[in-house]
Amino acid sequence: TLSLPAKVLVITVVDLVRRKPFVQKLTYLDNAATVYPKPKEVIDFMCQFYSEKGVNPGRSGYDLCIEAESLVFETRKLLTSLFNGTDPNRLVFTYNASDSLNIIISGILESGDHVITSNLDHNSVLRPIHHLHAKGIIEADYIPFDNGGYIDPDDVKRKIKKNTRLVIINHSSNVLGTVQPVAEIGKICRERGVIFAIDAAQSAGVIPIDIKSMNIDVVAFTGHKSLLGPTGIGGIYVRDKIKIAQTRAGGTGVRSAYPFHLPEYPFRLEVGTINV
Image (cartoon, rainbow, N blue to C red; front, top):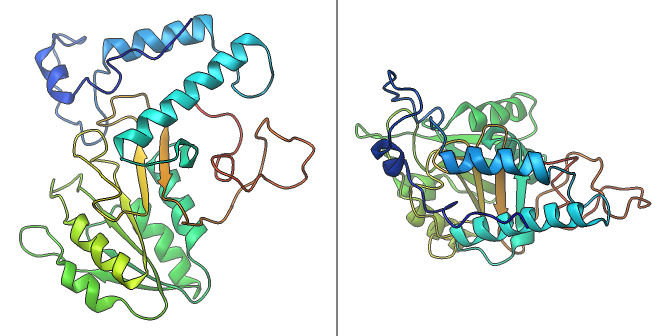
C-alpha cells in the first residue's frame, strides 16, 4: 500500500539548507520563485507513485484507482488542517497560485461590485482586477504602503463601501518579504460583511495561517514554494458559506450523466485530471 510519508508537512526550508544539496557547486537563493532542490522524500514518493500507483483517481472502481483517490483525499485533509479549516472537500486543487487567484477573482466579483487590493500585490491579483476594471465591470481601489512595505488596516476600513464585495491581499511579498497584518484586516472585513481572501503563495508552509482566528474566507496557495512540492500544483481553501461561482466546466469522473458541471465542492472548482 502506498501511503503519504509522515514527513510530508514536517520538512522545512531550514532542513533543506542543512542538507547536502543535490547540485554540489550551486548556491541557490531564489526560493521566492521556487524552492530548490526539492526534498528527496518528495522526489522518491513521486517516482514510487508513478511507478506503482499512477492512475487517474476517482475515474473508476478498481483497487489502484480507489487507492489513488484515497491519497488525494488524505492530502486534502492535511492541507485543510494546515490552514485550520474544517471541511477537506472545500480544499480545491488548481495548477498554481495564479490559477487559484483567477478562479477566486472571477468567481466572486460580479458586475457593479467593488474590490480592494494593494499596490504591493502580485500581478496574479492585479492583472485579473485590471481586466475587469478596464471593461467597466467592477470598481477597484488600491491601498498604498508605507516606507516599510506595510499596508494600514485602517486604510482598508476607509475604502470599504456599500458595494465592496471582496478584499484580497498579499499575505507576504515575494519582493520585500513583508508580512501584512491579515488578522486585523480580516477582522474588519468580517465586521463589515466583506469577503476576505489572501494570496498565500509565499507564506503557505512557512508562516502559520489560521483561517478561524485570522477571519480569512479564502486562501490561495501554490505547492512549489514553501510547501516543497513540484511545480504545476496549487490550491484554494474556501470557508463554509462562501460561494465562488463556477467559471469552467469539464470532466470530474463523478455523475457523468449530469449535463452541467457539478455544484458541490471540490468538483465545483476542479476541472479535469488533477496533478496527483
